[in-house]
Structure formats: C-alpha cells, structure tokens
Image (tube, helix red, strand yellow):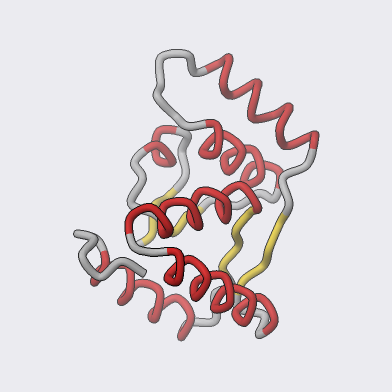
Length: 124
C-alpha cells in the first residue's frame, strides 16, 4: 500500500510473481489488525478502508485465505514468547509463527527477519 516504503517495489514484484505462479496468500486477524492500524497511522484512514475492501475482494476471489487466531494458537504463541525471551518478536509475530507451524507452512511473504530466526523462509 505504501509506495514510499523501501521494500514496496520488491514486494509488488514478488506479489505479482507469486500470484502468477498460482500461490495463495494466507493472513490472520492479528495481521489484519496490525496492518490496518499501520496503514491508518502512516497513510490515512481512507487508505485503511481501501485496503480492507481490497482484501475482502482477494478473499472472495480465493487469492487470500483468512485464518482467525484461536485459543490454541494463542497458547502456542505464549510458549514461543516464553521460550524466546532473548528475542524482540511482537506477540503478533508469535501468533503468526504458531499458525504457520500448525498449518505446516514454511514460507512467509515478508521482509521481517524475525521469521527466519524461527526457521521460516522469507519470500521474496
């Protein structure tokens, strides 16, 4: 969404390549919360609203799967929280780790190095 972001062009190209190759993206309610907040704070309320509607269309089109973090995921995230006291992972990151482990996912579309610390492959 943010064209001024240093990773914007790389993310846009990577996104297009992954979609063209038939990949489906997955996100969670925790990521949506964090994303809408960041877009609203760093861009505008309208940009956040536009993102919401774009995401809903992508979900409807089957290009994005939406997963709600449940109690089991939160419990697993807490275990990661306790186990990695030396890391500055956000709790949202930890819920993502838990969901990804639960779904046996190994690749993540992000530039966030925290995911690689837990053994996930960053794409692009």
